[in-house]
Length: 360
Image (tube, rainbow, N blue to C red; front, top):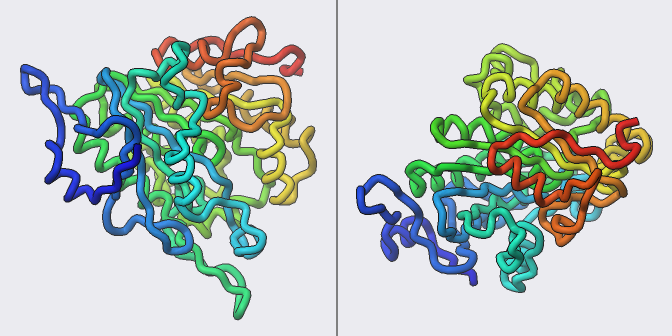
């Protein structure tokens, strides 16, 4: 079910939230199923089309904040109409909702789903900047020029403003995302923890290990103006004090983890992920084996420096687990992925799991 309402109209038709008998607990009043909501002025997709987000009611005071994937673009070739490597509008998301084709953590009929009773907020993706950008950038020249609204950070902030206005104090929050959404979850989890200091906030990045070529951040990262999304109250991540072009994803994980030691940070990857390999080679990297070696090295860096980090590494070349039926099918070393995710969500900080031979 999809309901498209501007937030002002939404507030006028439904009470902004429900209160318990003590008048302390505030939760959003949502129609059953998926509600499509307008986050307001300033939000936009890459090529100027309208942006919106989705929320589904739950029955407990717990929230999944879910960053969607959809590629990325950082130069004329990857941002052009013909060769674009990212989703640039909301149509695919609306089609998915209308067809009710959600699987994995979205499947409310599977009793294994650890989030079946939770509120669920989807942060859609159509800006090519892994939910980090705040820039309007033109790539190419003349007839080949293309202008992209890299406004992932603007869109996310608008949605988080809605979350903050609707939930007075969630007990637990899981910040997750597949592919580009995995990077969104890593960057925005500290913002959400700061927003709700008394909540148990845990992060699960799915299919986003951050393996890039050595010159990617220096040459392409500035196009997104991504430091605008940085958690600048963390001194080691404050752009005024740190050159973000010199950082790698393990730095983000380890520095967030050090600042918020009670938060569990985590990643799920496949050993030879075809999609992450595709983007790595598009940046100028080598092949799946090179990407895999980089992924293992990156996660070993985080693991060695961050006691509150854990990971699940599956065999094969699949990309993302949580949004698909394989979420309930994958088992490594006798540990079902769904049980491992449930443990992370509960703040239990499970041990890392590796497919047989994958640690080598």
